[in-house]
Amino acid sequence: MELVVLSTSGKETGRKVTLDESVFGIEPNQHAVYLEVKQYLAAQRQGTHKSKERSEITASTRKLKKQKGSGSARYGDIKSPTFKGGGRVFGPKPRDYRFKLNKALKRLAKKSVLSQKLRDNSIKVLENLSFDAPKTKEFITLLDALTLTGKKSLFVLPEANKNVYLSSRNLPKTRVLNYNEISSYDLINAGEIIFLEGAVEKFQDNLKK
Image (cartoon, rainbow, N blue to C red; front, side, top):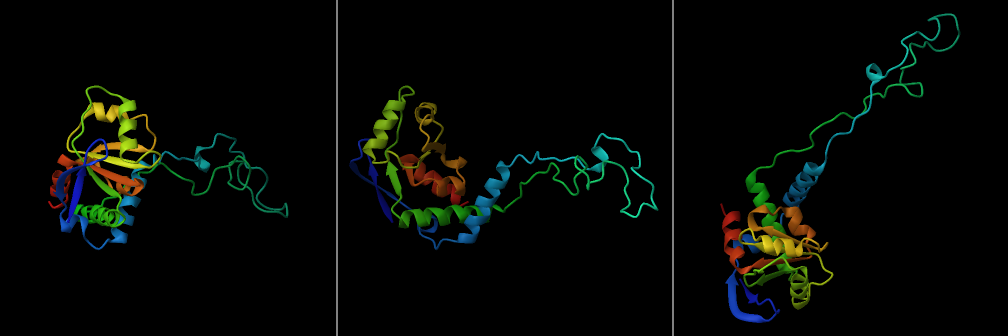
């Protein structure tokens, strides 16, 4: 399984990269993808929600009326959940929504997304990229050359590149990530995935560990 390497002008360079069948050619496991996306979204939640229970309300503790003889329901104090301004029953409390998944399942999820993206012809390989200085205009020119203007795209780098990252930061539909920072959510959320030539082998090795 091979993909042609494109130049920054969008033309074929004549070089090809080999994609590992065990990474880009498996039968997608939808449940594994679901679990990793669920884990990613759960980890984004702050979990700082809080409501006051009866014991936390500041109000009088005087019993509103006598226990018996009134012919109506028994009342305690004004902090009862049945009154406006009273405490809330079983309200939300601060909590951590994160949960763990084993590494093998997370690798399977990434492989499943990549295999589906390759079937959909949504993966490209670009020659290694570098900018002398952060230039958003140059990055926009690159997107035009690759016919990615207006599309959600994810660029996968073989190593951190500050100038490339800063050049793309103001573009709302474009993300630039190092190969070892990517989650299944990032892969799914991108309409097109562009691997830099040097990132392909590193990314594959990372998923075969």
